[in-house]
Amino acid sequence: MNNTITYEFPLHERIRVFIRLEQLFQQFLYLADGKTVADKRSAITVLLDIMSIFKRNDLKSEIIKELDRQALTLNKIANNEGVDKSKLEKILDELNQISRNLHAVNGKIGINIPVSDLFQSIAQRSSIPGGTCCFDLPEYHYWLAQDESIRLKDLKYWSNPFIDVYTAIEFILNFIRNSQAAKNEIAIAGFYQVSLDQNQPFQLIKVTLDKSLPLFVEISGGKHRCNIRFMEPSIENKRSIQSINDIPFILTCCLF
Image: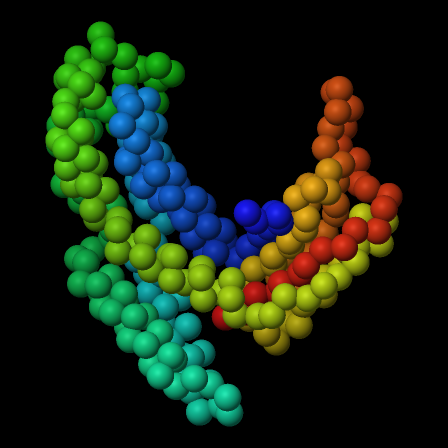
């Protein structure tokens, strides 16, 4: 059992969007496998959130740029001493395959989604609180009562255009998260400031602490400097306050 909790703070809007999508994709896949009507309703709600993000962002272009940047970084270190070349080549092959899959998609992902009239009706009614009741959308009520194999087939069909993107985002974020070694640090009186080298492409700050500590972490700042505060949760309507204790934690400043 993991006895730690990790807080992440993206240093660029691109990474911020990627992490939001990662969370939504994970929720969707979990809920899509659920057997209850509530699971399927929730899965579709999450899928609509995913589609909304795609409509607001040219994610295909952003992801390809990030993959190209990571490929360039890996090629630069290929001849460094101590680099496992076979492992590096395997990573590059995977990266290049993901990039080829995205290049093969015509146009902007998420614009021309092959969804059914039913899905479009659900999307239109979902903006209304409780707007997908059986008397609002009887066809949806009928679909929710169908066999699990039918519901899973439709969910796969509706979500299929986004799967390559999810694969790419998982690859990118995993690469970033594991790009640097973690360091043990102490937050004096619940506060720690991180100064980042402006000449290094830092992407993400990770703060890990023991779950047993009655604290949560607030991170603020930008790509040059970040403030980390260890906060005591609000109790009995009192505001959260910064701890006055020295807090041990693990810091990772992720590059690439």
